[in-house]
Amino acid sequence: MLEQVKRDLALAVQDQTEGSSEKGIMTITGVMVRGPQHSVSMLTQRLPVENIRLIPLNEKDDPSLKQSSTSYAVTATAETWVPEEGTCLTGQYSDTRRTVCQWLRWDDKSGFTSNSTYEHDFFTYYYDGKAYLDPTDSWPGQFPWVDYWSSNLPDPYLDTRLGDPDGEKAYTIGSASAVNISTNSWYCSSIITSNGNSSSDTGKLVAQLGHRYPSSCKSVWCSFGDDWEFIVPAWQISLPGEKNWRY
Image (cartoon, rainbow, N blue to C red; front, top):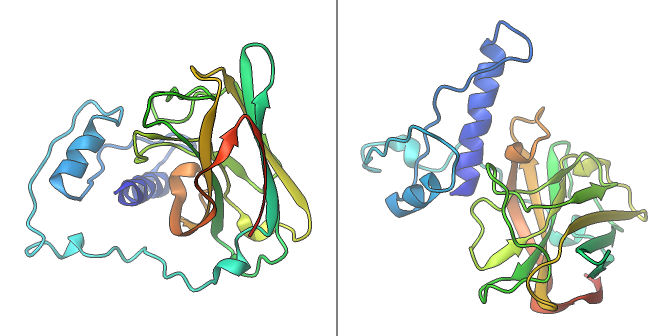
């Protein structure tokens, strides 16, 4: 569902950009989102849009509801794009702030193509309403509410939580130009948030391969997931602490 929303938004941005007479100014007048009624209804409650109209569509009569032509087939084996090793480090940054740092290194990146994206998805357990890091979502966009984030990944971006389960909180930094990742080099992504409401927590780590659409766009809204692999299964990361892993 989220992938279709992001694809529709990307198409709208591309159309408006190509048709704009004034450089840097564009107006999106409408976006159509298709999907199951309950999923679309839930999405309308999360998007910062004033005018939303739900129109029932019959899939049998509407061939556009079938698989989008922009979907990408995954042909790369996990060993060619998942990092070889790394460390997930969480702890106290100051009296009022906490941090998560992800260190990662690739020994093979041959699975990345010219428009590949990579996301190092770190999720914490929030089904009990307790969180070591600040669980707050920003609005609009539903990004994690952070004091600071940084990464030396090529063309990094902070990922949105839009479409994620309510009981899991993502603190993810991705790379919009994964093909430019160098093997046998160490990369580090850091996020700092205010203290959460708990002194401990658990997490999981997931590698995600994706692609950009349009290929010229390097925004989080133009990154679409194609495949994923567990690096550390749920919920085997303890916060605070250090978790070394090897894929």
